[in-house]
Length: 248
Length: 193
Image (cartoon, rainbow over all chains, first blue to last red; front, side):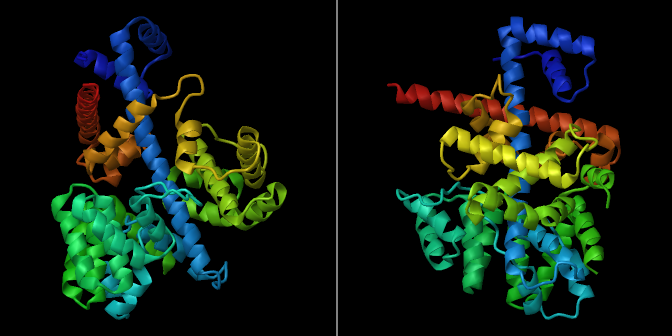
């Protein structure tokens, strides 16, 4: 259905809360009486809803990562300075914290120690799996195995599935499973393919590729990727620095 | 930190603040809800995560500016409503599908929910939009950041550039959505033969 530029601008203004009360009243009357305008309104509502839902899902995954880190670090005293590490680790888990060269130059740790400190498997945010689902397909079985920490099984199933259908989410999780299993070369391949063949999950693939290089001791390549990420994702780099200060 | 400070911190903050609030009330909340509604540890955590997201969203959306009770009482009240609503609907407690729950309770208007097909196409369009557009519109529509805040966060030259970019991103999203709709109707037409 074709819509005029004026109508599109008007609907956008409505969802941006940029209309006056009188304009809102006219707007509502128009939605009720004009089918074409109503379809534009419904479309925008679905789009804004999807944007909000995406944000909520990201924060939900973040809380799950915080929860998982709390479980992993139960032995840490709640009020110790290490407390804020949970949030840092959780952010790294979902691939949004880009540490840049700051980390590689500020800590006297080996690349392997840095890898151990910063690597957390990326959570399954791609496929809903129900607890206790007895009629699982190979696909849900793969994601379930990943969620349950059975990375060997998950990796095998993801490899099989990827032969017929290459999906970015699956590649990311396979790369993570391979990293955990110590198959570093295969993990590198997974992240390079993900980066090369898909537009989405760009930051995540680079983040985990940098960790692959750290794990294999190739600090120079890791540093180059981290530098690139820190330079392009300014908001994340700023967040990483802010958190880093808090951790220190 | 007093209640006003907590609200202010969440309103201007990001995920770090969300994580801090999560940890602050976690133990007490989980102990209470597990016992009160005889829930498993996993189910209690699911409810707690939704509770924190509602609290966070209410602040970001400007629905919660002042608290008449404590944060703890507010959170327990939300948790109680989620658990009761789930029990009422299902007669016995069944695990909540969190993503579905978020759509039904934080996105949809009760009297006029978003059509499931349109919503699926909108989600698919958003996935295809790519960065930095996806991040920009999420900052605007979900995190409710102002254009000047987005200008700083994403390093745009000036607010005007950020605003133009936001409009361009939305136009691109609409276009992808329309393509998804056409693709979808072609599949339906094809299947009907």
